[in-house]
Length: 591
Image (cartoon, rainbow, N blue to C red; front, side, top):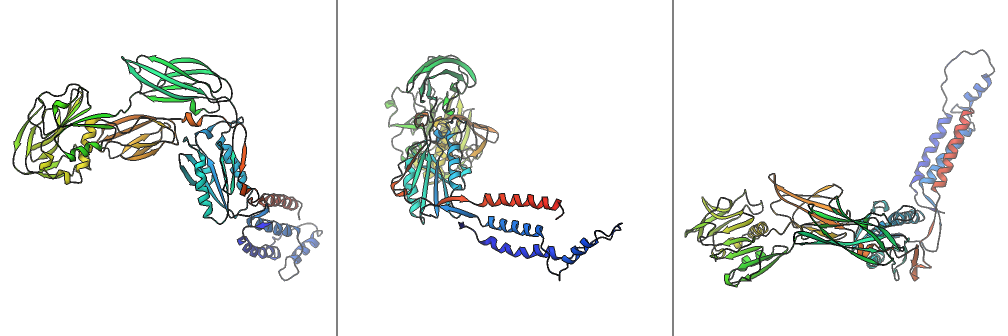
């Protein structure tokens, strides 16, 4: 028997109070009665409850004192223990990657089963053992939790064996430890003082590994890959949706271990994403759906025509999802189309055809706008209404500049008094911008706002999107590139939950699968609205291979097991309950 807490012993000082309540003289009401038969008993009670008389033995008092002592004993957390070794620390690691969402025969998930095993193990150890609860989310992502109940299902992927060195390192820093790792994958625990429990169950499971598309002559060609990851033959239907509108249905019969590929040609897709879905529920439900966005962020091509401008080149290289090409002559531009043309100190006589946007730096008059040379040194200021708060404080000096007569669709971004030194605008789907001075003839490159100014201008012209890509697999980090004009963007999760995110922030894709929406506004003007999806990691987390629960212990752990046992507290509380019932019965009988 082990006593964990001694502080409840001070409650023993309350017992005299209970006795005092029984020896205090009771106050009676005077009543008239027709007989003296009860006088003798009343006299005895009066005599027994006189403080200076001998205390009368009262069974109710004895029961109450015993119950109080039992309650004190329960608070001391007595524990019947057995085992060879007693450690002060227990490390519990629970795998909550995507595969732990697999449904067992009783309807519970593997994660729920793992948590129940951990709770039972936790109950069987002494109260004074320190518990370290860790959740493994995959890809070296693990977190310390305050309790087992705080662990929830995540949708990452990874090899849980990578956490073993961390557990060993954590255990070596403790004064003796035992580790318990619960997963649905096998874990080599050699060299670690502990054991692993691998969960498993067999059943039917098919997974959508991929859905992708491409545009072919105005139509959308879709390819879908489905694999049988279960232990039985799979039969069911696979459907293709335009968001929520059903387009195609195919019947499937897939042998164990087999993978099939389906091809579709779709007309008139209007939604923002295509969804492939298996209609039949199986052991892993989340891998039955796969989303494919229609609009995808592709790498944008930038053509820079300059003799030499290292400041400009570095600024353009900072734009994400872009590829920079450089030449020193307009004549060297290849026949390929580019998303952005940057002409530095050179103005083409014939502007590029196509829909590529154009940025002029220190341009001459051309078919889009006229310029007037100003040779006076002036101070240039950024326009607050157009630039973000991070770049609107831009202020610099130029030795000479060009006053631009901006077209009707343009907005000034740089000014010197009434002179317009820079503008941006859009005409017939093509964005045009101009900066009316040579960067080398100014101190703008020395200003801290210059990289931000060029980044914002480049983002507006190249339109590379607010995120790096549109399709993620559970567990991947979602990097919000954003648009710097957005003081705050709203991220809408598939569940409808919203969260405010800033540019350059990162979002965890472990918690929810499905379609996310990123929205950004400034002064009630919509600056962006992009969709991206997070899909189940079917390639690595859909296999149902382990059929039964397997335990694996390290060699050093076989003869050094944490001292376990049974808590006596529940039995004590049961005795207290029985005592209370007995006391109530005796009270009704008049004792």
